Length: 232
Image (cartoon, rainbow, N blue to C red; front, side, top):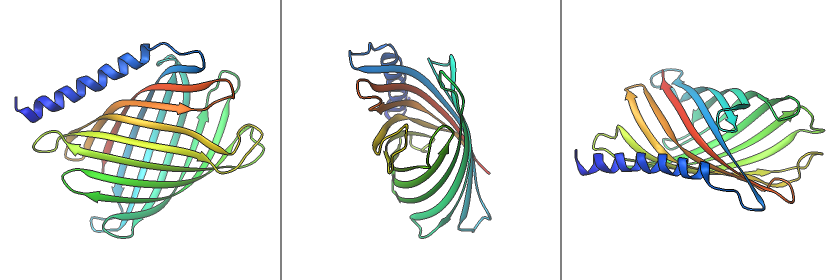
């Protein structure tokens, strides 16, 4: 086993260790903690081999209390167009269903996004999204801005195993009866991406989700995340 391969193995074990440790960490007096699982299948493709148009279709399933309780399900489709070699813009739509402890929530979400990326031995990308959310029980449309930075880099000589780090901030742009304008949440992801075939890969890792929550309780969720990505 080469040094690079050993490094990749160590990263994988470190990610799993962090997930296990964070899931069992005790909550402090003012922060609620909760283990969760997020799973996704993403299909991606182009309108043609040389087309600037791309499409994505995602299926999302999220649970809380570990895997014990269904939390959220959604289907998401988007279309984007390359503006330059490094940038693209697009629109999307998602239909989601939420399962809080009391009741059932439906959501229609419309999204506009801009992505910029830089390619080298590693890859860095910045994504800005504007969301218009129609959630049952809200008295008005929710508007939210999301800003994500993501970096990947090769852990093996052929790049079949890559390290991944990303952070995304969520900010509410308006107020409703259930949510005030301002900072919504932050998601920090650390993981690895493994190439399975020439057209598919698996990404697995740990997500720390922080949300201010109610005035007396902050919420910190520890999430085990796994996604299958297939390019068609």
